[in-house]
Amino acid sequence: MADYVKINKSDDRIDVWFYNENDKPFAIGEKMNAINENAYMNGYNWDALFNYYLAKTAPELLEGLESDPEAGSYVAYYDLTPENEKKAEKFAGIITALIEKEQELYRLVEEEGGEIEWD
Figure 1 (cartoon, rainbow, N blue to C red):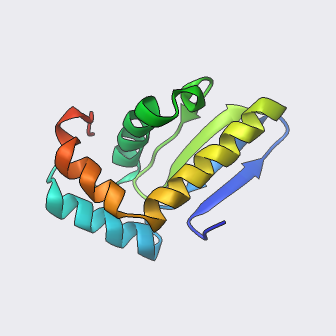
Figure 2: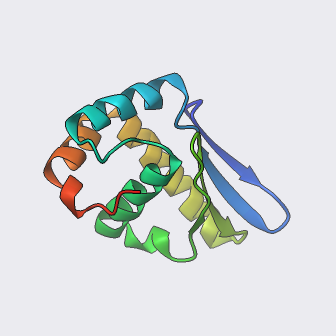
Figure 3: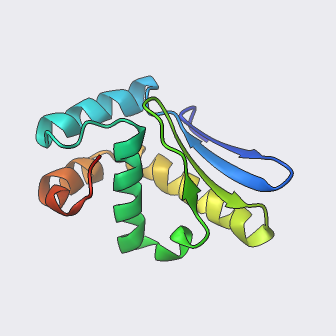
């Protein structure tokens, strides 16, 4: 898994951490902001983007998902169940795929940015 995405388990929940201030996501976020001034990519706007993207591409991942965005990171979490562990793994994979294939992020903010509920 990429150094900017981590999965952590505790006694009662599973967390997906996205460190948006790591070098690669931070540089991508700056390019996204250059494309769309509303897309200044702090944790809150990553939350908005992930909610939008998941609703369109993997709505089942939103079931039971809670988030705790901050300026420098984004955390999504589920109650700890076998089903939710699979959801967390899939969500972490989606985040990694979006960062590694950043053209999709640029397309999203350019073509669909008006539909995203930015911070």
